[in-house]
Image (cartoon, rainbow, N blue to C red; front, side):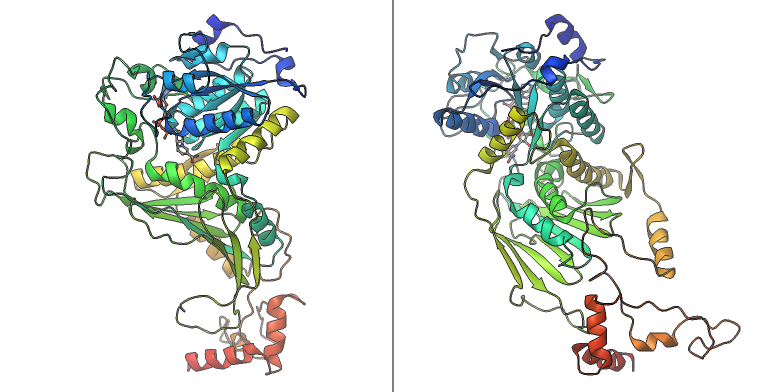
Length: 550
Ligand SMILES: NC(=O)c1ccc[n+]([C@@H]2O[C@H](COP(=O)([O-])OP(=O)(O)OC[C@H]3O[C@@H](n4cnc5c(N)ncnc54)[C@H](O)[C@@H]3O)[C@@H](O)[C@H]2O)c1
């Protein structure tokens, strides 16, 4: 088997501070696997989540799939008792994988040694977030394909570097948002872009939880987790850079603390709290269903309102993201109440409501809108669905995401179910939420520099100008719906409105008029026609509106 040729000393030097991209031989980039060829997987960061990846690969081995858990890396010796007896950390995981714990080439606390191994085909990265980008880039530059846990990175700049590295190296990468294995999101996207929901305005989702001990404090700490068993410097990553910044703090800034190591999600240097840990799951599948990617404008709110236990990250958070496609996403949570907000997409003609929850949804239901309805009070409950999609898939979504990733690896296809391009867009949105929350500023996404910049009044000003000009609405990516469900039909009496120029009543003959009418055949035009004949539902609306105005 022709594997990547790779110089160890060179790699160890270049991946530390001042790293430059390692070049990959064309042969390895174009590598195609033979039908019976084994694919060797290295697991980097073998804590809690990685045990589920090991489960998948061991399961696949039982099913005679050609995958091998080949090497493991962790900065911690490990504990065989944790994880319901499966164990966690370096040596217990090596044992689970059937690797000799004394094999220093395949069992290491230094990921660079593992990436040097020419036999390794895939790096599965499940370290804390601050290591994701550096390891992904190093792995791809070393000719490995990458399955990296969500969130794809810790910073926005890192996410952009990972996207570039994946493209440049032509490696296959899957970001570990396993819900992307659920066909519900693609099915919803096809429904939405067909126009049946009308113009798309808003998507909403949430990730509410409640835990007495403080979110993420449920990761246990033991006396055995100490500087002898944990390589603290390698955990912090202060000697490593990515996207022009050190990936972690120094041990002076953050001295050894087993709680920080085990419960790193509570602290900004290693993650982004619920914004990046939890919201990123929802954001990834919701934007894929809605047909949007990078937001135009993001505002993040929240605070620590109860969990005053030394953590950095808020226990209540909400992100509002607005898009150039003329719609908005709201994502919200508290870690102190577990009633969900509901996941849905709202269009002019209907509401698509996702049903169920977890990695595989039950599917979705669509409820029609009464666009002829007048100003009404908010109503309780929903009518009968006008469309239902039932997801037939169930089981282990992580297994499915791996199966898709391995198929893509074999076919040398970069379009996995969870690409770095999608991962970067979802991550950037939630990370802008973090930045907005922490700086107190609204942010714009600057497409040309691929960076967030401070927001100003131009967003509202631009949209107000469009309204004055009677502009057309923007639509989501891949829109096929035409104008149906995307227009406003002003009541007849609006003809009486408009500025009196030189004292002339705009409704009088000869006066310049500005009026917007629905395109022929659109849902609005049909409703308007029915109304004009005074037999349709809109005539009711007209009467109501008149009544309201009187
Ligand atoms: N997709 C999901 O549903 C899901 C679920 C849980 C966690 N995750 C993600 O998986 C990742 C890991 O989460 P977890 O809950 O397993 O955390 P964890 O703390 O249990 O495990 C992380 C492991 O990485 C090790 N590590 C730290 N720095 C390292 C380094 N430089 N080199 C090698 N190993 C290093 C730690 O010692 C630890 O054993 C996170 O990014 C998290 O967001 C995803």
